[in-house]
Image 1: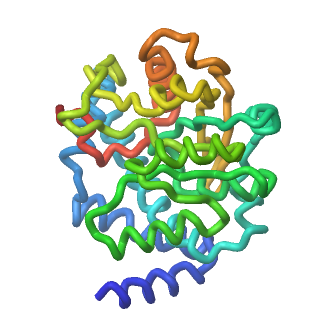
Image 2 (image 1 turned 180 degrees about the horizontal axis):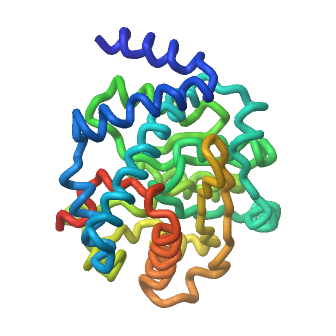
Length: 284
């Protein structure tokens, strides 16, 4: 069954993006109206985040999200076969904010989120000198075969995938070997119930937040950079890396995390359809 899935993914990935977007237009009503994939969770989350909006406005955001969600699903599949030239044309990353840091020999903690097409962000090595490592930090999936598929996808353009339990050891090794790196951290995930160290107001909700990026940044005194993935039009992305915190060890505890979530909330409020509403973010 898994190998049949791989063949289907390969065949879809060979299609031009323009054709995949036509398929997405066809897929959207099926996912939204027929399958109703996580509709209750999405509706609940949007209502919690935007209590000031009418039901009509909430449903409008919901529909725009599901349409983008179908685009995203097919874009991730396309990533397995897209050419370097095409990708650099439609997914542009401004790396100026981190070049000086990397050139000085220091590593960077990059805080990103499930916003826009975050999976294509693993193409960051295409925009940097090969002497710099780009490390995607991930949590091991229960389905090992699917995990291997995603690992191959995310490392396709030279990024290194590091399981979160091995991250501290790898950071120590790379620092000792004087290897500057960008550590790509998906920072908006819900922490496990037994690992909640901080809560804050985020999108109108009392929210348990991950603090691992901040803890590592303070430990190593690595600059923290916020990532914003903009989608000016369908099929095109502009990624901004905004250097915000140069000396994290000098800031108060949880200040980096709170600044990041304030930054993320601002972007979500501007374009709520690009955030991943399907996760039960406020379960705890």
